[in-house]
Every structure is written in C-alpha cells, then in structure tokens.
Length: 397
Image 1 (cartoon, helix red, strand yellow):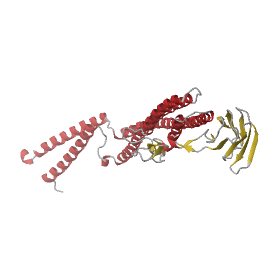
Image 2 (cartoon, one colour; image 1 turned 180 degrees about the vertical axis):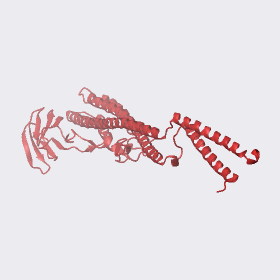
Image 3 (spheres, one colour; image 1 turned 180 degrees about the horizontal axis):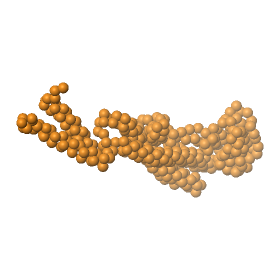
C-alpha cells in the first residue's frame, strides 16, 4: 500500500480535528459546570435529569399553588375574625336592648348602632384578595357576592369551592363560599326553633330550648296552645294531642324529646310554635333584630313580643357565630395541611436537586486534569506533524 503525503495529511487533520472537538467539549463543560451539555454526550444521564427536572417543576408549581391557597385562606380567616367581633357586638347590643329598663328612644339609638355594624358585616362579606377577586363568591370570584335588601341581603355568588392541587393526589380548598358562611345558618338552637304567636296578648317569653332526646324528635311541627293562663296542650301538625297539663311561670314544657322554657304569663289562646330549624342568612337575622328594636312597647304584651323577637335574633346570631367558628376551624385544618405538605415538598425538591446535581454537575478536578491532557495531546500532535512534514530522503543523500 502506497502511503502518500496527502493521505498522511488527511489522517492528521482528522486526528487534530477530533482532539480539538474533545478539547472544546471539555472547555464548554468547565465553563458551564456541567458534565454534559447535550443529551448525546450521556443519553442515560440526560434522560434521568430531564425526568427529575419535570418532577422538580411540578413540585415547585405545587408550592406556588400552596402559597396562593395559604394567602387566600389567611385573608378569609382575618375577615371571619372581624366578622365574629362584629356579630358579638350586635349580640351585646341585643342583650342590652332586651333589658326592661330601656325606653323606645334608647332602643332606637341601639338600632342605629346595629345598623352601622350591619354595614360593616356587608363590607366583610364582600372582602377581596390582592387580585380583586371576592373571597366569598365561590367560583364567581369576579362577582360581588352580597347586596342589602329590605329583608336582609341577596347572594349573587355560587356554592362552588375552588380547589388547588398542592401535591400529587392532594387538593385543598382556597376559600369558602358566602352561602356556606353567611346564608345557610340554622335557626333556633340548630335543631329546632320555638317562636311566639304574633297575636299573643299575654306576657309569655320563650327561654332556653334544648333537645333532651334526639332520637325522640321527629322533625315535625308542634303548637303549644294555652287554653287558659294556667293550662296548655301540645298538638302536632295534624292537630293530634301530644300532651297537656297545668302551667306556672318559668315552667319547662317537654314533649317529643324537646323541652321549651316559658317565662312570664301567657294568656288564654296564646300560642307558641315549635318546628325544625331552617336556613336563614345572617343579614336577615340582623334585619329582624332591627325591626324589633324599632317597634313600640306601649303595653306588657308588646314588651313580651319585643323580648321574644330579640331572643329569637340572639339565638340566630349564636348560630352564625357557631358556623363562623366551624369555618375557621376548617381553615385552620387546611392551613396546617398546607404547612405539612410544604415541608414534604421542600424535602422532595432538595432530593431532586441533589440527584440532578449528582448526574449533571461537573467533577472539576477530573475535568481540569482531562483538559490539560487534551491540551498537551493537541500540542504534541501539532508539533509531530510539523516535524514529519519536513522529512525527505533527498536531505540525507
């Protein structure tokens, strides 16, 4: 085989080109601090790094979702704290107004205070987050949820509850809709409510109403009818007699697993109804209280009606306070879940970053050693070629 100068030159240039490519690759790795810069350099490691990066990006998105939920829940909890304070103020004013020493003028002044606090409640119910979205509108976060009416307020939101994913297979609600917080409140004691007849002429005032045997109450409607000032009977919705007896002021009347206390002295033909609790909004309860506070108490029967109306309003406000406490407890549980998941997410991200680093980060000591070797090899190759190019037999003849 004839080895020509052209063949030698071609082989040399190919070898030098490869040495230069290897050197360039090593220099690039040192500059970027990565053991490979293209998938072709290490396909297996590159595939693993890509998978880990995808998992890391997903985990970081879960963190962002958790932060959004945490911020909105924090705003909601703060709003509900203010809401509870306002409700407690209304309750205190109602107790103050229910004192027999108060005049109609005093109760009118108390009503003005209640009205101001009612407006504060409306502002709280229409709270927004930093993005201008309403906290209590459900899915309709751009729609103002509440507007006052003569009977209380209307709710324009929906009953949805937005969910944000904070981990694989784990979602958390970032808020509560206004229907749940402000509208779907049980009246009375939460199981049943007792109310006085509007036409009562006596001074009977409802006191504590409790469930003594939940299994005995069938959820029906019953009427406590006074035949005389000292005798009563209880009938169901079909007018069937349930029980009857004599009555004295402050007596507790028990039937169907319920007991109702009556103070004062009812008159003959006075009635008190007992029925299952129903849903009523907090604004309706406050409006009913305002209506009662602005009513006249010119005689003992009117005073008893006022006492019964205020007592009913207080019971309903207590239910609103209980519901807000339940919601805040739920918020606390969700915030705890987010905190716990954030710790897990941080640990997972640290582990993923460590695995990516182990696969992709450059071993500088090894790389620099290899770089020096490649520089030496390239320099030696260039010098060898230069010497061989000058060789010729004619120089030795």
